Image 1 (cartoon, rainbow, N blue to C red):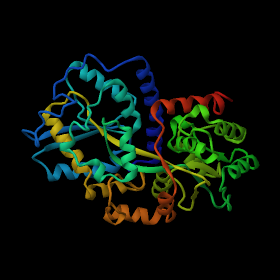
Image 2: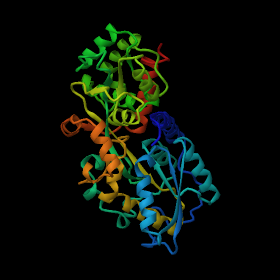
Image 3: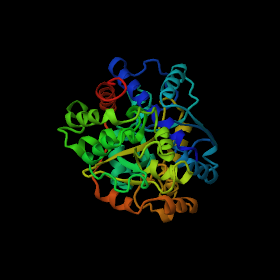
Image 4: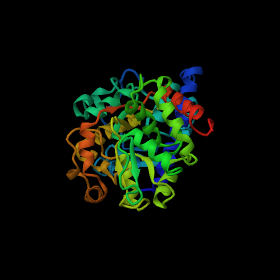
Length: 410
């Protein structure tokens, strides 16, 4: 498990790819120089149930997903040597992978067989025409997704438009993390949070939303809390922009990522920060944030859900594709999904039905037992859930925050 600062790095990459996706969608189309070396990505033809010989698969992670799924990959290789001889994993940034894949496709030689991504590289790759459409073309090679997914994962799967398969999912935030020593009575409403910020200047902090998962979920969650006209359209967020602008003079400088906010609450620089379930459990489990820190949810909150996806570049050959589809199918088995509880990084994590914490590895069970929150079960069950904004709306929200609230506005 990496330090939470690596999680901050991954979320900083998120917006860059979203911006790239929006720009490409506006000015470019699918690459017309792709040399197809494999089956037609829209028909699902010519893909055997098993490859003709064991394959070496090259998997690139741009979302920190290997923290959740490395054990699944290891198990697959061990249990199915007739399908894969080796799985090579690397990590990269979400913005750099689409351009690398596009160059490989143009050259007719792919070195990447599978990408594990959040909505960032998923969106960028869709805009540039890089990904194979896995469903419905290859439904026969996958589980019946509508039958195996949880209700929340099914909603996140819709965002993939058939170009990816959700492998993990969680209701991220917004939450606020607070130091109970300095905040014995935490804010329970948006108005109380604003009042606390005014009464305690520089003690309420969140990072720049385009670079931070917790800040992003806070930004997308406030329109529901404050009752804006259309929470899916940032240009209608009159109450949210007014609220954040009113708070801005009392916020400390906005950090470039979530990791700094965790350091700041740990060392006492601030009292309250934006958080998510993963950014609550995982940093406390790793000792980056003191275990005694608390979290709460503001009245009227809706969960903003997040997910990770398996996506496949166009042009891989039929044996590679056969192995990849077998791996994805395997990863969606309940026993394997239980591994994704991990150390709370994407809590809960599993995308399929019927996966409970008692099915997880002993280490994961111990972490969740010690650092999880008993109240999460009820909050996840009883609070409304919303998907992330589409890529273009996210870019617009980040730009408007810059103009109306953040460093540009100041």
